[in-house]
Length: 370
Ligand code: UD1
Image (cartoon, rainbow, N blue to C red; front, side):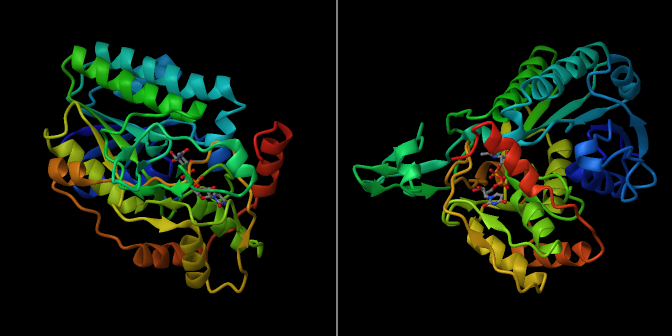
């Protein structure tokens, strides 16, 4: 046995894949997870996909006694427990701040009393806001926002003197621009962990995940990533709805590559005290994603381009992964086509409640769509 690892939120999408990876590599894994209804459904049992050798503790990250118990004899912690919806965070402020910010603070106080050898926290590309851009003279542009007038007029790009700026891969050095309560809470989690880790000499790393996709992503949760939402729409014979013109770009990384990056982070000290982008380093438009998914699912349902802006959305963000490659000696292995084919196979056995329209109503009734 190589060591005892605690994964908070380990029953979830990324945590469960990391559990598999760690157990396969000879680690012992303990999971602390509340099995929240939005992800796991009502009165949820331990998910069937969870590795049978993982030791499961049901409990909330804000329950200090459960956290204390979960930390007994643990060597390293992956802190993944969090609420993850950007739009939802704009009206459930208390819940997001409690689980993400306060939950992390409680975990850290218990870690201080019960020191560990390594702490790895899940952060997010959402902290960047817009990605990095260049103007016509190749000058870098940061601190960018789209203006509402442009968006109402279906001018989707970012402009400088009438010229569209060019998006380029975003490195960790880009100044964060927090545009949702979710992003704020992720930045807070990053900083809480890094500052505490430094003060108490616990090697700590914050991983900024880009758009993670793959099997086990909660299909009935309308606040998760676009691929899960599109999959759930198509499984229910509904057309995926594409915001804006669909030409916005993102970086999609397969969940098994994310698990491998997590393992590499655990096993090297090269990234200690650092933040690392975890992305594929490639970018795709949302139109390309919709088309690719439709193809692997063999559905004859075309997506609808809504020409509508979802409040809080950024236009383009994709990762510069040089730092990850250098520190971890790891590059993502799974090409999008391969990852989507695997996803399609899994989707065939799934049913999904399409809650997308309900979530849209929640947002629009609060003036959170344009
Ligand atoms: C956001 C967060 C990210 C988080 C992820 C999943 C930001 C900048 N990033 O990413 O940290 O991990 O959510 O919670 O806030 N889209 C559609 N139709 C849909 C759904 C989405 O067109 O039905 C579009 C969106 O408008 C967006 C793109 O797809 O342009 C990606 O959306 P999504 O998967 O929600 O992720 P991000 O907003 O990139």
